[in-house]
Length: 230
Length: 290
Image (cartoon, rainbow over all chains, first blue to last red):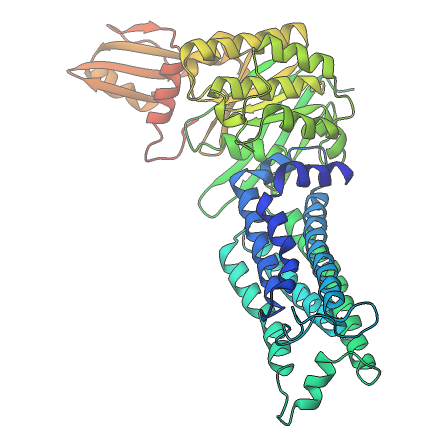
């Protein structure tokens, strides 16, 4: 697996995947929906898979003395790496942005980005929803890709459209101040003792869904891939 | 231990519009086998089926007597397949590609790799797309030999090459088979390549095996007759594999044991090109007769 991952990173992964994975830093842009970066990360995988097709990566890989399912495993691990990288970048930049606004003692010290978080801010619930969305994207895109003879565009469009739904829902629900849904909105945008449980639950659900959906998708697609003629 | 490096037994694969049926042949150590058939005959499908790139419906592939599938990883260490030239990662430098590829082979021999690079005049700093078709084949051979592959399977390695490059590749095959005891199966529809270096011929037509035997035996199975069209020829023409009549001149290919002689007709030994042309001519609109 170490050699296959080396192959992925040395040969297969298009530089744009790296670039898009750093888009978590967009959280620093004032008044920009924070969930947008996740859509860029999903679209980055088009470069990965299209590059693989243009480079005949499947033929190259299948002729190597490795198990077929390990080819899929390496690809899944690459996707996991880039999604995690993007989340980590986003978390770090979020922490920097918060500290610029509130300093170490929680007191507002700058107006640079004070009210810059429109929609859902980068709080635990936000990360839970982003991971949930990645999980939805991975399940749909990878399944349609491997099931339909390595097609890319339609699986990418379908998976992105469906995966964007929880992101849009989060953005909409977190902007409901002054409406009957204000209490839901508060649970999503405020981090305090009264919202901690809800925030933690959303994060845990997001993480669990992400992990289990990736594992389940790998097991299913590895079987499909073993049977596929190239 | 089997006498054969590679044995293909009853390989079958059905597609909606094509069937590969019951393909069997064997390759000995140090033998060069030409795998022949016109375009679309099933050569590439056979090769892909052998290596499980497509999944055969039935049949077995044995490598040094043991099942390819049961020991797939070990067998891939000592086998190499080249589908055409190297047509992957075109924008990657050879040294990068080699740096990745060699990690997968237990017996990678860097010294040997350097020797072959030098022998084949390959520049490691070139990208795959900058290599000529012949150089791509040579790079594939250099990589295969550096992990001590003793079975090489090449799908149309000489297609698209000029005669000089083709000859170079064929001489490399001869040297590998004679000096290194490498067994080579290469598919082609260029019959002159086979006349130059093949020990045995495996001929397939429309997914069916026509013959698999030593080159000379294969050629000795057939004869060509030439003469003026006559009522006598009309009587036996159905026994011909196929024939061509133009301006009252007849040329026909027969299986040797089907031809009993005909007055006024000359017989001659056919070359592979003639055999292939007449074997295929017969089958344009009918089932194969042999």
